[in-house]
Length: 476
Image 1 (spheres, rainbow, N blue to C red):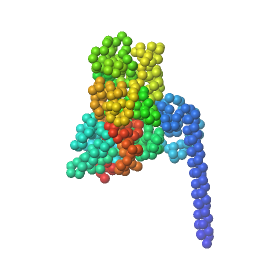
Image 2: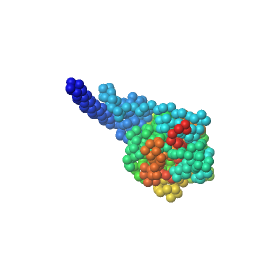
Image 3: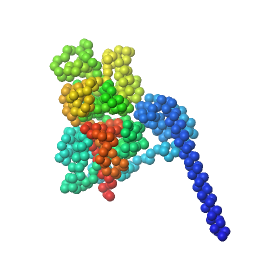
Image 4: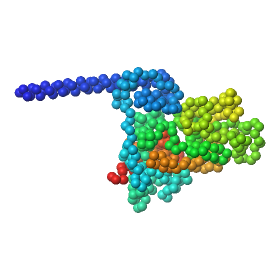
């Protein structure tokens, strides 16, 4: 009987301690949550915005540097608020604030053609743009290797049917990288509840960019060497800002791709490049002769006699000259508000005389709805009604899917031939899940940028690049 009484007493003691422990954990969690919220409120009062980017985003430019101890992004426009070390320590004690575990190293195969990713438990193809040299008989793949979404699915299907069904490299379960609809690591949430923006490490491509390859937004995976394109130099095979608002204000501003010739729209807190223009012909320059582009004396400006506008010949001046504007990435890309500020600073440069003695620089405009566009309004390919569209198609003589300049085939970790542009992804819960039949919205699918680490959605008719993996490893 004594044994039974002692046993019951011990069990009651353990139960009491367990209940007290639960209460302590609950109270501690509440304290952790309150401390984290206190930090977020301090960030808000300091001017950081919920859903912003590395320029002034509450999460990326304020909360993460304070809580996780990471360096504040170099593009951040404001100093961090002063927070008590005790508050930071209490917030860090919460599970929701713990830093993400370090990524395991990628494991290249002996032949270098595939790479096992132990973080996602998938095997990547090491060639980030295989389609540029191997189409598997699929039509509508551009010479650059980019393609629309439907073509991407056909190309992967052809990979899997190769060699009488054995598949490419002996595997017949290649697929697009997946993206979950909700990802708490993302900076922003879209109109349909989908997560998007920078730092989306919950997707397969985001995990690769931010984790295994240790890249950081808004850095490009591949820096472009100096280049010459007609009378221009230092063109970037990426998206460029216009000064025109999108037809839908929620979509931000019209942008133009000098990687493919596609005209679309981008939210303001994304990092794109800038090429500026002046309306009309510069005084004192030689008269126009013919309809082609004409470099003005000194080679710093270029006149388009058809559009009657003058371009800056340096297609990425911001990488060399910021005019004192903060928030410009070292590669020259910037958010739209910074682009507007940068152009204004150009016009005030040289003690008010303006850059190159000109005070009328501006972002190129799109103009009214363009019937030449392949899609409705000012969207799609062949949009020659806009300044950048006319430059791409008419004056530079490029075609849909052509890049203004080819990216070098350099190593990015164990990968090669990765394009510093947008890649297709599909919607699915995990990296091991098959692609779902429908994307985040009608007519859209996921994409990820190796040009700056931005995850978003894109029209199915756009042409993006494709890199693939299959679930598991070659040894399993």
